[in-house]
Length: 151
Length: 312
Image (cartoon, rainbow over all chains, first blue to last red; front, side, top):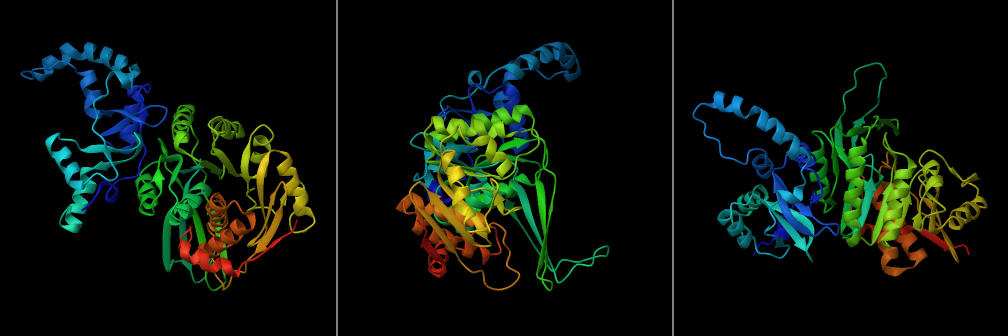
């Protein structure tokens, strides 16, 4: 049976709760990532911050797009103000705290379930709570296609 | 877990030619491109030996993804700080008929303060799980030896062993105040350290003693192509192994020696055995086209060819 250790990406890219959203946005852009783990000083996973969380922090209210031009003008000053605030804001205020982690010996089938049922694209992998890597849908897909099965 | 630091990593791009005609068009008969830098090579060799190793430093640009993936493929965990500039490439021109190798080094990126701070924070987070930290290679623009001193201080505070593989000019700034496990001066461009010419066997103990007096627990000095002098407070060893054949690519060979030494010494606590295995690892690296050793098994076999003796 395939386990997480067979398709883990051993990358420790992460941020702490005190990192500004501006830094996270730059990091996600430079690394072409959609989200990264949030860790404490011991490298223990405390949460998850994604580009969706950052966008949601800028546009928290739902906007009706009946007339996009009017809405754009009406909200421009609000958006500029919000962008300034959000840039300085810290990850800990916007991260998802109830993050699901897996271990290196977690069966691949459990990861599939987690990704499909909870719609996760990347999941942190921990050992004794400490981050040791991530698993993502593309690695999982690759192993499924290569091996034809997760078992 | 072992952490290796390479502040200025680079792609090692090897271009093989029968010969080069300067000022004319030359077509390479083959090429190789791989992640490089002192700490990177060390991490690769350690990973091949089965060590759990995390490598860190600065990366950036389009090539970085390939750089990281190549490292992960051989079992190295990556934890780089990304900057908004492209990673550099070092070009190795190998002229097979002439048995000549030339190295062309690109200038590295300049690191902004915000990235330095981000790196330091990341480095500190790696320490709680680390048993040893190796810092090697050159300093990128925007950094000074004080930056290395800070990293050593963080590691010392967390009681993590520190290995330095740096040029003398940087080493001088980092010694005295720090507690260091292994000091292995980077002697690629010189055969002298602290005023002692290491080609002279009488000078080696003197050079080693100077480094031991400055707080190093173990000193490793290179005196020949694959000849090494290792000193501890109460014992000194010397050993060499012959490199066979022509067109041997020395890329990563010295890092292979250090990796082999660390890997073995952490298990045996015996200088002589560690030096012997290190020489085997170095020889295995010299037989590899990559900048890390072929295999641990080959290093174990080749170390039997090493001539290692206790000096004092």
